[in-house]
Length: 557
Image 1 (cartoon, rainbow, N blue to C red):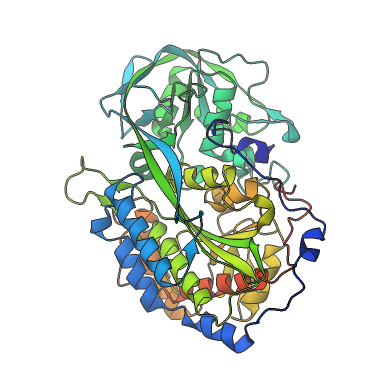
Image 2 (cartoon, helix red, strand yellow; image 1 turned 180 degrees about the horizontal axis):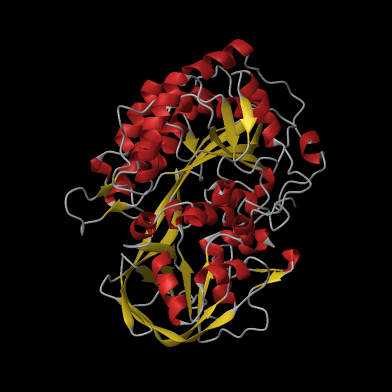
């Protein structure tokens, strides 16, 4: 079910041409040319591995997260500067354009910016934009509204036959606004047998909840924000869901989406449930026990959304080091180059520089690419680097690429994704998001042993990180995808002390104006992680290696 859901926002008119995934049989490996090719020695590989360093990584991070780049919003001057910088760097390394004779792939986007001059009227009270609620519309329309739309609480808003769960059972929500809890029942109960226990499934993601409400025919969808199950504070809602919101250009103007979607704070939710004669805590407990929905008395919602619509073209960046033996088979390294841009309505600092998220990952693409470029002989397979747009808007760039792949899915060996690298020193462990999903874990384990490190699982399983970065789009079309970074065990006491100081700051600065490069950062751990990813890529570049999904993975084809 999950793999069918995640691309539901994309129209057939825009997203075409998905190719069948790699077969489990060995016919592809046997199709390799029999002629021998020059091979890099262990010493050659070690020299490239050791060439990855903090000084160059810092240089790239500083450029990409500078005020000059303006927060790297899609379709902005910052995008032009970012793409120009990537083109310059990859050309200098000898990489070839990855899309024919171009380093770019067009991604048609539309910016939908809701006016902040709105209030949400429920139960005789007007709730304020930004502080108590954030609302908008995904429809490509200048005007949308709810007018006395009846409120219905639909628990977690999940319809999952494989879990025998349907919060919309026997419910007609046409013309109504559904109120939904964030995350999924496994987190609420901590029951390992319910969904996947503490580890969020895609059903827990806000994207799914709006998609399902739309499929059910609701007029509006409101998610209740709570910090623990959402895994981020209200400031992320305020910073990320206000201002321009990007979507794909679609002929149907997203009319299949609910008219209004958004968030309310927990305090507002408690107040609304009280007005409906319901106890919020008890309703949450009941919602976690099984399929559940209930009318919220005579409460209804009214709000008017005024949008400014701008169509634009953004770009994915793609560069390739052609393989010398099986050039049509690729390992793809990915990272998103975009961030939240500039907010001119703010006083003082207006730029969301996005230094950690994700200038670090974009800079890492350049560094790992340089390590491959320094090898005396090109790998047998092609090594491709993909910097995608609009990740912060719902993984749009990677979703577009996955549905319009430049490299056929069946010829894509694996994806290695880098997002928000470790900036607080070396770790004894490597945290793998989605541990157990595929055989890529085995390659990473082998590489980690060389660094005397161990593999650990997702340190924040309730946050659903595996569904929140660009590797997810690759996984959805059947390409084994690896997403890992330095874990939670500090290498030494000095690193532990640094983390005690830095980690609260980093958490506060997620999607905040303070996500800027700091001289206090320690990027030695990021370098070790990049060396791991390089090592895994070297192994995958050998002809005949085709990592598979585990038998229990929802992404297995």
